[in-house]
Length: 341
Image (cartoon, rainbow, N blue to C red; front, side, top):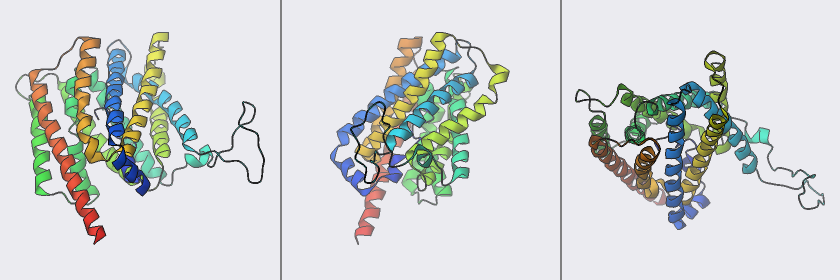
């Protein structure tokens, strides 16, 4: 995803055997969820561009995004817990004056077993957010989205060095070709679109590191915990800067900030559902439909169309991303075959 938080929860690594069984039975639901999430993320990025190009500081836009995202994260954590009646008690049906009893309290649901790890990945998410928000304030949505699609290639590199995952020669070749696609979009020395076109590359790098750490965090903490910490740390850090650059938002801007936080939360939820219904290798190609959404939203909202080189480079990046997902699927089958033996 082009959005910095598109892979925030990395639900695949924490899926149970039953969830994987469901995933094989309902791939169309997973595809639909991911396609809708791509549109929501494009709408999300358009709000960022609208606010930042109309005088609101990028850090304030990010602050509003995190504040409302934190609200969403707390609500998500609450609904993630299951209801339970007290032992031996006979209770009437839930009513407005009778609060339900939770199987897990919100405090337990949000407790991190690896707080240091959660803090580090949350700072990386914040850096990813700020870099991408700054990028879309200068360049068109489609170009920023196309360059940001290099993130899976960076994840491949980091997975090899940090997680000690084996990467074959074919995947290394795909990574190299993917970066050639990025160079086609950026056009260094040949009329570069804007120096800000480099920011999605940096955003993809910090985002890839963030996603690798999210894989590790998923071994210890729930999705709700990771979502909550990412929102909390971002909100607290950015709040420290607000006294120095605050510009009082208008009512319309407050509504857009709320839409920003809630649409980000909605998109994350759709991504969670997508990876619950279908395996990553099945739905990965549909991630790249976001480039079409970004083009459509960018033209409808800002009357901006990407250059031809963006389409060419984007196609190269998408092809390598799909091939990488294909190789991941083959490797997953090989691992399962070894387990069966």
